[in-house]
Image (cartoon, rainbow, N blue to C red; front, side):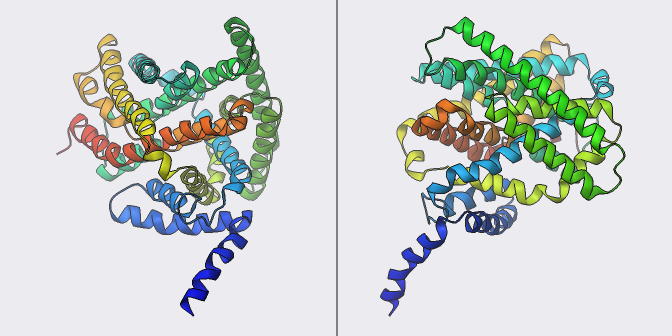
Length: 410
């Protein structure tokens, strides 16, 4: 009897696993339980979401079929567009005027050193320059959610905490800009006979077009929401405009990241109610982001992660990124004559890595070259997800150490 039931289980699984609604539903339920389990062992919920996707995905149980990859990619596009919008909304002129010179210098050095070390390390290990540069750009991303949670837990305040907040937000914005620039150049050179100069020119045109389109979307959002008092109306308009913007960018091979971030920045400078508008996303963010991270987990392949090649590249990525963060902050703080506590401890506070990095590497699925070369895309995704898992395990404790020492907590 039991053998008969066991024989039907694979058929029952296959009957549901190809259904997109079932796939999203099981990922959300799995994310809830795995997220709670992760928090109980003092790990970020994000780690649990990723593990839920890994367990439910094609490399383990198989409740989410690999045929759903292209359909689930739409959720990734939406989540990433909203992340870029939120990052852009932090860049009002009023806030930019308050950013200190030292913060800008430290951020620039941190991004540059991480990019150089990761890219160089991967190229030496045998990776093609274009792919290494893309991963080098992604490596500069941090994890704002983890940093905020640690600071709130410790109730830390002061100049060190202010710099850490600024570094994470400004650094992620710089990461998105660098990634969009690198992918624009790489995307035009991969599988193409045009030279580097033509690729750069094409990339500049692509980026400028994205900025113009994003600015128009930001103005439209301001115009349509400025007199709206109902939160549900604002949410409908916001989602509608951002989805249309993302679709137009992807259809014309423009940067949806640049466009969404520009829309957020323009909206922030046109309206004093920007945070009210952005905060309307709070009602849909939890399930969207849970699905987003779980989908990333389904991209993980256990067999690939056990391969020496992925472990080598992933190890280089993790170590070079950590060295770049600490060294870059140290050099930037020295050049800007910043406080010694910033020089010693700020870099350790930026080691956690999560949403932005995952979103950026999954964004490669929307690019023609990577959509056609799934094996290459899978390798890059697994390297980044390996890094995120390692950094979500080791990053928060080091970030906590950074805040305790840097903010001089008792």
